[in-house]
Length: 253
Image (cartoon, rainbow, N blue to C red; front, side, top):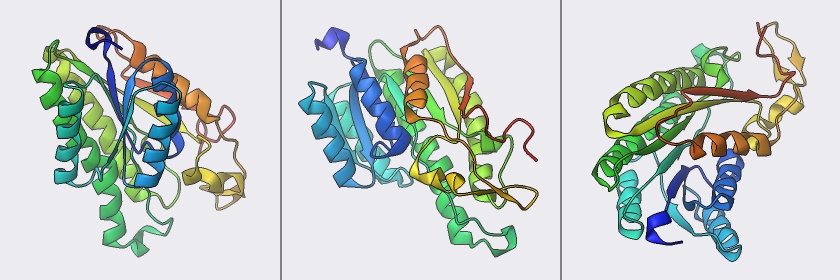
């Protein structure tokens, strides 16, 4: 790919689940992909797989909750590519599902550090690069959650973090407007990943019952991300919800 046609995407949490599916889809669409994640084996294996298929992929071990790690990630992107056109803030985690009064502060903080502070740190560095590059601008997609609107029982850290991400998405969209930086959010319901595998065994409902819930194939999530990513910068999807049709969301509770 010539430098004139170069388009660079950074995906955090790229080694598994949604991040892996989105990284693969974006690479197939012609993006040069930077795969960020805490586990080197998974992101390096994916980079090798994509490179073998003729795609440009770079694995960078990153802990998005650490300011120094995020700065090193973006320094690598600047040195390797000189620009960034898309950031998919996908890395996320959750706390043990326990009653709120039993939740440890360390478990709360770990979720906030990754799900919220990590999004802020990556967004801040993306702004610095996207404002300075030629042409300036780019797109940021945040992985939110339908839980920000309708939480599950015993999920206060995750719910609070994703509710905050929704506010950060809107502030980012506003603050980036003058610099041709678009920001939107994808809210995903029951994508078939390891994080929500419990719903296929029986997820706790507000009534106290446990019900098996349907899941959504990751290919549909990847297609939603690639749609948002392919838009020209004068168009933006501020929020997009993609979910298993029959899951308990509308009417939950």
